[in-house]
Length: 217
Image (cartoon, rainbow, N blue to C red; front, side, top):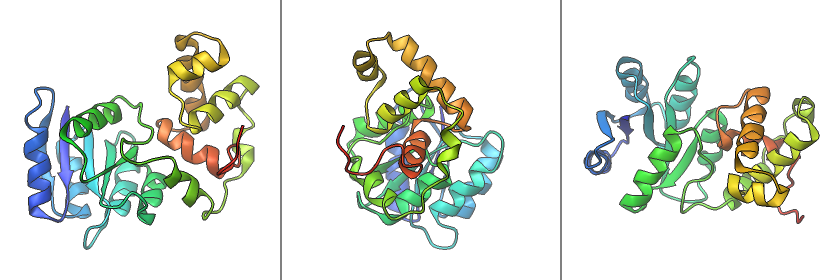
């Protein structure tokens, strides 16, 4: 798995790079001091995952993520942030990031998060709760609910459960179906809505009003 680490603090990016380098399935192919360098290196080195600091001078992590996602086969982006309620995280997810992680994360959680992101199964990274999406979803304009009209009733139900934070096994238990059936529904939802992974599905579910922040089932 090819990885680029982008952070404007030398100690931080060096530390993450060295830590990731201890894993046999990870190869850190480059480090970047700002968003522009991260974009340039990504085009040259074609990483699978970019660990992207959200706040950097010049081009920040949000704009860098947006530019990386503009291509047909950009890397998965894992946003690094210092605060779990960083207002920029929501914008980074909208730009196409697959998840986010606090910088004080443990080594094992970091490794797990990168593997999850690379597998396209990203949702909300460990250490950050759904409260982040819920709070910022209330502050942002909602998307047109018409975008969900192409989904079947079952697919809509699955999307709602994904947005509520349930895993595939939990959704299978809730709907009394097999986990493989749930995977099929999730895949169809992502394909129909033109979404890259579960994180983007969560954002859209809140923005479209399918899931209302703070609502109870």
